[in-house]
Image (tube, rainbow, N blue to C red; front, side, top):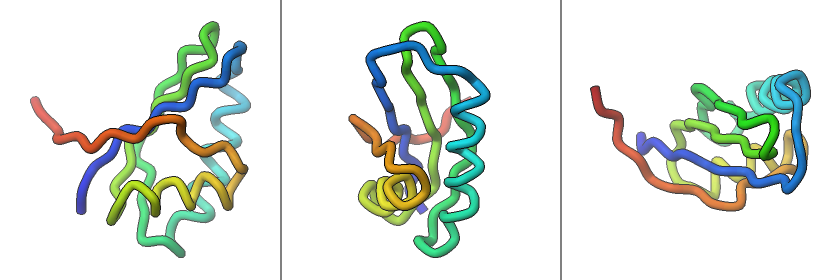
Length: 83
């Protein structure tokens, strides 16, 4: 299945705790869409969140975010894993 990196730009600071709660909601929602959220990174001060997701397509990944907590990605990029 393809890998995607999605980017959320919130425009204000965000806490790791808030992102962890949103990620937990993604994990509870993902199976219904054949999606697996693998990892995430946070730039707390800039309010940016980056999620690595295994999904059949970008829209499936965004559907999980939409249903889980409503915070859809601003951008989604197909990526390939390197060493």
